[in-house]
Length: 180
View (tube, rainbow, N blue to C red):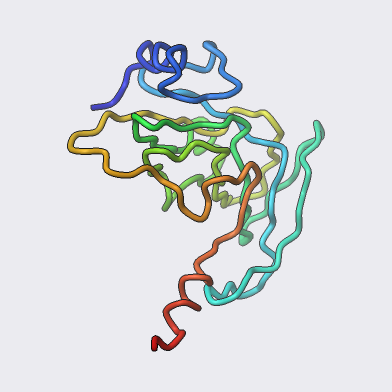
């Protein structure tokens, strides 16, 4: 079941949900508007190989913004540290941003129990678009779970506070190593 905005606020105040910094002005009827952090990674490879660490350019956003261009993959992060040990997060784009031609979190919108960090966001644009630090870029909803909560997320992206590239290459390298 999805939490309402008032329940999100209540759970943030109780400590069951982390949203830091938190502003009641960003609470919606059943979600919270998260903002764009100040760092981007621009993937610079012409061909992205999942078996290799990608090449990228690090960008620090300023008040002048940064122009995103079509055909390029950008990784950004949420300004807010977001997550919970009790509720599952789902991060999606805002319709206002989608109407500008920005595709956000197309494939990786579900967060696990225990994942509490600055989330890496995947950004793609259909035409040039300027983005700014602290702009409302997406929304997060929180869902209650059923069943036993046997473990909390402690995976490879757990502790990042800036955008981070894919670590799929680590899995692929492990799979290709012979077992003895």
